[in-house]
Length: 239
Image 1 (cartoon, rainbow, N blue to C red):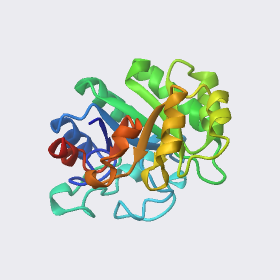
Image 2 (image 1 turned 135 degrees about the vertical axis):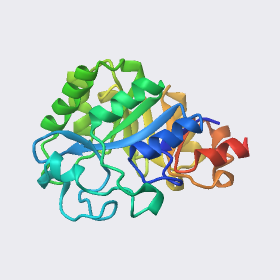
Image 3 (image 1 turned 180 degrees about the horizontal axis):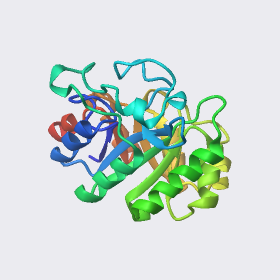
Image 4 (image 1 turned 30 degrees about the horizontal axis):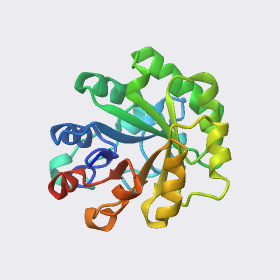
């Protein structure tokens, strides 16, 4: 059973932190999913929400905070005392971690209203090239087809996965347009017929975020290739 550690091992450590990534590696994760957006000075940082409110001791929009301000936040204490002083990592720090530990990264490009998609993609490209990460160690995913189209243009050798909650009726044409590698969908909205259609066209099929293996036991028979989950450790037990 193939799994991706969603935002790291986020059931046991604060999401999108080095601590969560370290636990994922200790659990034997091959893939870690992360979320990337830009700070005020346009540095790619690893954090999911538009604001820092939920997962740090601060408040405010990520895009309006400098790296110095973001680094001053505690991104672990909300999860537990053991993670006090955990920082918001940059994409560069996370890529270096992935290189050291030979783990692959599913980089979700977070696009919120008003974001400059081209700038986000260009800044991510610059960091990846500076760290010199091999293309086969990475996968871009996004709910924004525009972001994936931009990456198709500027980093064509890195695979692309389209995120949807529910796979739309025109999925195949959209996937063809971006030369997609994979489809990522909410497991709650996937049915067998749709899964088999996607697989028949040669795409990888990933589901997010099934945290109870028994609920998706049949999905493997449908052709689903990967579960993006907070609890990859539970899938090892289930298998």
